[in-house]
Length: 303
Image (cartoon, rainbow, N blue to C red; front, side, top):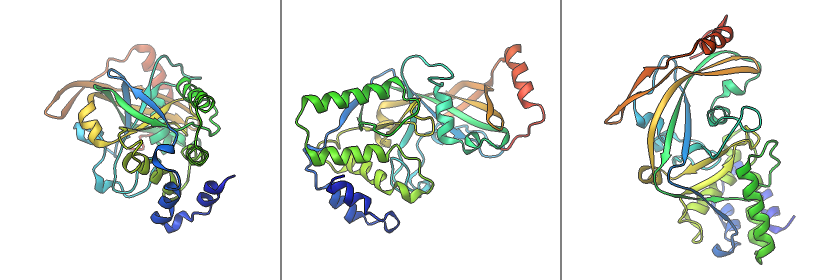
């Protein structure tokens, strides 16, 4: 361990001492902070998922977009209180159900406490929304040094790019220590909001303070609940308004018996008019109906 690690470990997150934390960040001169630039190019897809409130349907794009500032009252992995970010699951290339789960499953692991509870059973309604990158997005990536059980190809590529960068460049020691500390921090799954104090503020520092990095559109990081099987982005709201467009949404039913689950898409977007979404029921094939009925037998809706 070095002095930056010792200083960061000594931070009492419950005190939320911003000045103390940022004084540690500033030990590293702005242009000595080593980072990797990662690009989502125009045409890339993003997935967001939101659990429906009991008996409700999301009928507007705004309900599925980034939340208003007054709704964000806690620290999260990549945002401060009252500073919303557009969180989404990104996907590139092929996937399968075991090694590389579909993006909607990754996003469920991020958003649904019911999905993660291996003791609960029932049917949960959730809405998956699809978004398209219409202008290239530049993201900041960390080296992702945490122990991810199922790292996807993109995460492996970023790790390799980091190692290659260390071999090819004379990297500032304090800068490396700071970014590697935070790379481990973003890979932790904390139980309380305040425990994200350090990483949330570091993301804010990277995107809004540091002269080398504040021109970036957001950050990319592995899905912690999915063990790195997918990756997420956190993008500034202003960038979403300019570079990302809503494509459509679907209501899904998550049917679950303890640790066994099945996700069925029930409808799709039929039209979008002035931000209002109209849905149409999906035609479900007999084989899928049989699976649905087998799972649903004896289960009740929880929302």
